[in-house]
Length: 305
Ligand code: HMG
Ligand code: MG
Image 1 (tube, helix red, strand yellow):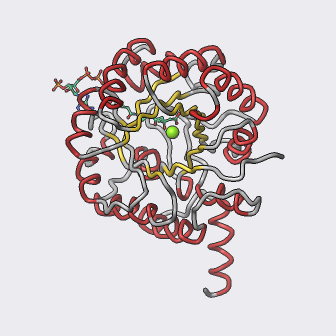
Image 2: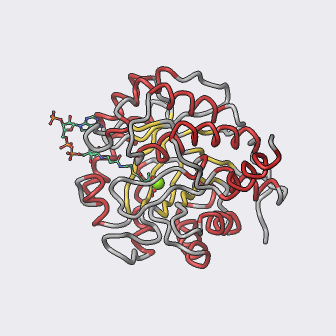
Image 3: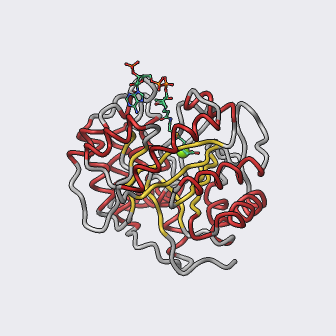
């Protein structure tokens, strides 16, 4: 297996991790989650969303969260924005990195954005243009890149088309999402290679949910295929309220553990991530979904540590 010497992990726990949480998570807990994560050595913490609060009530306090965090130098704090209204609110809050989120599946685009794929790209175009003109970092997600719960199979051509259009509109990073975690290694290689052939490897990121336990293998497969940016969430929190059956993202500690032991640099302190995961599990009142957290935290409990 040939892995890169160094990769960038994007921590999405405070956004993807919390957006699907059924119980209300207090604003100060979200802020502490972001601040703890930012002190683990991670370079990017996706912090919240500026979407319609009726669509994602859990993140209705996005502006307050953003205003209250304690920025760590060198860490970026992107937020999701679907439209110009969201961008305006984000700019007013002082945000410097945004992400728009398209899909390769028409059915999911309708459910998640109330729009066809082409209509969503029309909605994103002025957001991307204005954000880029203001010097913001702009990521474009392509959800359902490996399958959709409403449509089933998603042709790779659709993933390539949406990725290329987002890149053409001015996104500086394209992130392929396995939103419901159904993909497997061979398909990861195929989709990543096809998209990279259009837009290059250096603008590509992956975002693997772990529903079928494939998140780690799939992320490593993407690294082998030349990608060097991947999303994870501490404790494996996450899911999308508009994608039935979607479980959490690949856990940050699962990926950091694998990369540490493979000699791949992330800049992230595994111990600090585990502490954050254990703290958040206490706040949410349930154990983390991560196998690494389970193994290490349980062995410590056994030690009386
Ligand atoms: P819509 O109902 O079509 O909106 O929703 P609209 O444009 O018709 O506007 C209706 C009203 O909403 C208007 O108010 C707007 O001002 C207001 P009114 O005039 O009726 O009083 N409005 C807003 N308010 C606050 N903030 C905004 C905003 N926009 C409009 N930004 C919309 C369209 C895009 C807004 C809606 O569908 C939406 O908010 N969707 C967000 C869904 C979402 O956040 N899903 C989860 C994130 S995606 C994900 O998790 C996948 C990912 O992790 C990758 C992967 O796993 O693959 C990223
Ligand atoms: Mg997601």
